[in-house]
Length: 95
View 1: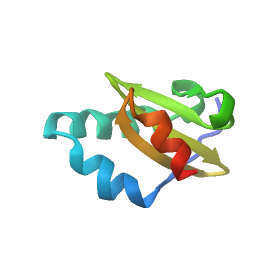
View 2 (view 1 turned 180 degrees about the vertical axis):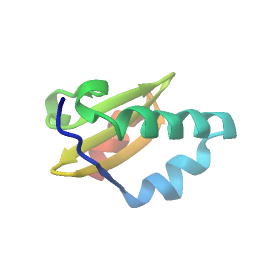
View 3 (view 1 turned 90 degrees about the horizontal axis):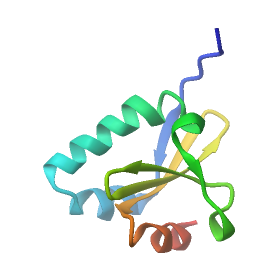
View 4 (view 1 turned 90 degrees about the vertical axis):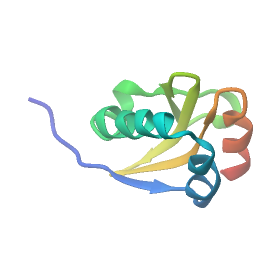
């Protein structure tokens, strides 16, 4: 059996102020479920590493939306939850 680590979620201020308010109810539910069932369980297994300017960060795909995050010890820092065409620029500006 592996070691079970419980992670604490930390959000960039713009995620709650801007990103989540722009989503419809259905997408909010899907993203919440993805965070609870995949990201909180095993962020390394379910997320893909990013390259270039976002090296060291990871993404979790939820339909056409992406969650960009970084793992630091027992914390998952979420920098953006946006449509795939906008997420990488927004995440870069928030880092």
